[in-house]
Image (cartoon, rainbow, N blue to C red; front, side):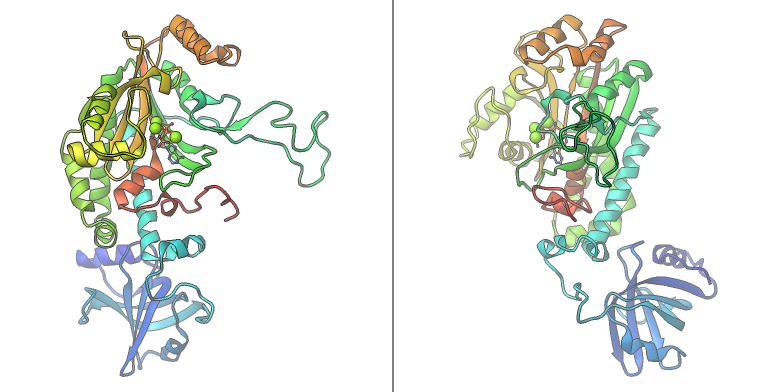
Length: 464
Ligand code: ATP
Ligand code: MG
Ligand code: MG
Ligand code: MG
């Protein structure tokens, strides 16, 4: 028989569709023997559930079971049947069994017991075999698909913006620089010197955001989004910052801040509904082991309106809270994670969209309000994490944009194309950036963003 994925097998059996012998392949989780029968739990990553393979003494390959240990890869042929044992509905009675690849139990680092997440971070190559990281990978996959589904169904165009760029986009954070290095000792192009040549003699960086380029497309195709890797030289060790993370950035023409807030809310509610629908087993697992209120929280978010408040109202609420925060709360200072968590967790108990931040703490391209002091920016804050979305209506007036750039000490010249968008057929437009890992972190109830991405890039962590 051809290999069937365990997930497909179980759902086919649930609907009574399995006929005849099947083949499964996967990695051994545990092996237990009693009275001449071996019970081998195998997992192939398609679903959280392990499949129990029963190997009786009458199976011609019964002698193999002694050599089966956690981590081995195996193939089993047999017939699926209702299981009498507790813990699973179905099992395979093996007609034949093959050991594909062994795993020396003296050396294999993953054991039956639960390992700490810190320990598993040292084993980036093996941790996808654990329940937790398998579940993270499946939820991450479902959410990536849900993101495309949402925007595609709304007629947005998926665009790709460059990873190597000369624009330092907004000063969103410290950047990594691209440098030229000749590892093969091949002659470099004329004029290039190892290490100080940057991008063929010009400065270039790894992108911190695709926004400015996405604006180009919004000013032609109206509704667009990017979904790609971004890089920030965040020299901080927090549980929600990475040096390499994925961002989803819609950019919409003829859209103001209210329209953007509505889009952000619809998007997140739709995304959490999608993950509730597509990953019930994995979410139940996270609910059981990581956050007892996870599923309830996600359902509440999917089903109720977000709170809206201005930055000025948020500051007033924080000042009136009587809490002693580590960072002072004063009008003009950016909100810190502790403030964002207070607003969502204590003040309103659901996601909050904070709008109209002081222009002094936001980027030059954000649309200035008539008060001359605040900009049409928004952050979407969620409990436990704080900010997951940052966005704004963009300044569409050429003269105001030029003035704001001058005030920010930016040279016009490299932005000639950005200014052209205001020079020719300018239109109000707005967009936001959603941190993908932070959003998956929220949806899984995991504490640390390092456990959301396969190869977390944080200070001093690039080799593995
Ligand atoms: P923070 O205040 O948390 O540092 P930010 O305001 O610097 O975030 P933005 O520039 O607004 O971030 O980026 C948009 C979104 O990208 C954020 O809302 C967040 O979800 C995500 N994000 C930003 N920096 C990081 C990072 N270093 N690692 C992971 N996600 C990030
Ligand atoms: Mg930041
Ligand atoms: Mg922020
Ligand atoms: Mg932000």
